[in-house]
Length: 187
Image 1: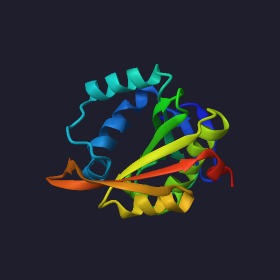
Image 2: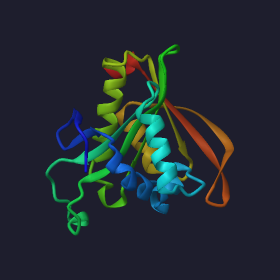
Image 3: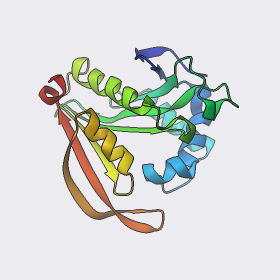
Image 4: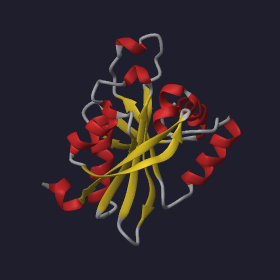
């Protein structure tokens, strides 16, 4: 199940990803409701996910954390006692420039409850207050309006669009870029 607590919020806890979570990660990134918005083109089997986990877990340039819903039984996930809702990560972290890219996904049954917002706020705050980064970036495909709204709601600024830059789910899609600076976050 979930690893050690790393960051805690009011309703979610961000925990370390452990070897026993590889199957959860594999299932998550292969679910079309997660895979398409994330731009995951190729399927990922357990061996590939385990290799990625091994590389990420030993890298100083990646922070990947599980989003665990704290003690709440969401009626949409009542059939399961698994409170692992998704993942939030800083990848890559560029210490020379003081930047990182943030990415996140939640299992569909945990969406629209504020969990992604809280997880995103926790990890961005960590990026600035603990990693001493200057800037956090995010990229979102044009059809993922909720993710763009979330980024703006927590303080990211829309910075530009790269037209038809990605081939996602059978079509060329625009990629929207967002960023937040440390002093903007603090205010």
